[in-house]
Length: 155
Image (cartoon, rainbow, N blue to C red; front, side):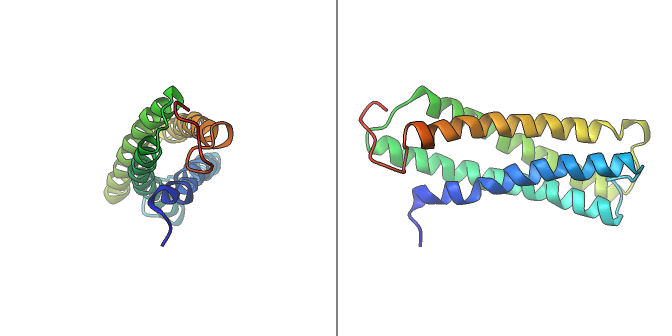
């Protein structure tokens, strides 16, 4: 069993990839005039990718909090960590909400018509959010060595 502080880095890639994949899937579907809010093949794939992104984001956020607690118990402190934690919480709750909304739209099995372009637009915003969140996470790992190497007290 991996140590608790190493679970976050194992999970973190799933919501990132799923959100980027959603943008690509839904832009491709929109360009072919396929609805992603119906119980079609592409609608089902897109919907469950959104649900998966939300569930993985919440799990990643939860284990990220545990990883930060572990680092802080060892004396680490950084404003970058607080920014990353805040953005992680916003990402997790936003992606979970998006996944649930997409599931409701899929169950209703209706096309959105002129509102269809809003779906990939919202997902592009989600991809931007996860990119910024990941940037701060990368700073923690690659610049500060949090939970990777021994860090100096005060980070």
